[in-house]
Length: 498
Image (cartoon, helix red, strand yellow):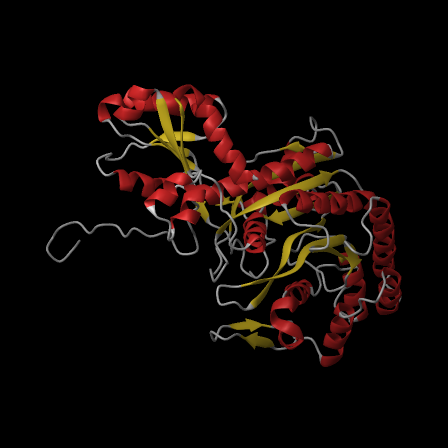
């Protein structure tokens, strides 16, 4: 209650860590996802939609950067006492679907999914609690050929989204190789995989932050811990200097070629059977990817890739954008990773007790959209609808008919439905809507059977410094017969697109 006794008005603000998406942004996302979906369908993948809400039990405890059960998710208890939560990714729901519908699904089962996910984590610049993911997965394929196929399809999807070849790199590693290195460091026991699990989790998350924290920051997390600039302290894995040196040597093992990298990794895993198997799989994956056109210019073996989630069991991969843009202050900026995934052969077994191999990739939709926007720079934004202005209120039916005629011809169009008294306000509205053109017909034009079409983009370019006579002489404003409305608007749109 306010001090004077009146009810307090709610604050008009988004919750912390969330944001609003407006027309042009939503249209850009829809267009990009449609292009990616077309690639996935061409590769034989079918769409799948799952609820935004899953049981906490089904989601499991796989989020990075959390050590408490159920931490990191938005969860609540329903009237039956069951704990539910908003999904934190699209992979855990897929594991539930594969287990629940295993009798009806064709295996290997190929699916793609797109939608928002939620994480109850500390928000920060560019880090939101709700964001979109776009996934593609193959469930029931045990061989590395499925991993190689996912990588090749990811490359095609990125190019369909608008990332040019040469502006991205798919980096591949293996959790089996990492386990072999950790075994050599005394942090993994094949006979007792749960032993040292907490320390391995911290190691994974530390390596996953290498590009952000640098070697010094990762070394601190491998040891006693690290305090960030805000004063928050993150406990480390407690490794000795010798153990940390083995892990950091693994991260830096990338060679000039894939063969060089594999040779170094074989030395690092020593006698570990899991490690040797992981290196064999990396060699096979690289060869199968090359057979699909992914040479070293688009796919490399890189031990620095580990992925932060705890359910990966084999090859893991990330797609990194390699081009440089500028931030709002003109400083160089690189977007880094926009997609990641890998093999998770044990996830479905949580439900069934039987191992069902799976592999997949997830594209960070918001991050990829931001990269595409930055790459485009200050170019033309998303185009709005043609605006039919209102000169005479009593002729509203005529204006509505014009807009309907344009829409029937496949052209986005709307009638100005605000107060038509000030014509300048109508044109300002059209500008704010990024309208390519405005349609004008007053009583004089109606009597002569014509309409005036204003090319708003060209008009803005000519308006600065042009006299009224010069303006009228330019093609930014033309009169066409009423019967030629559609053709006249199409001519403006063609000039704009050309």
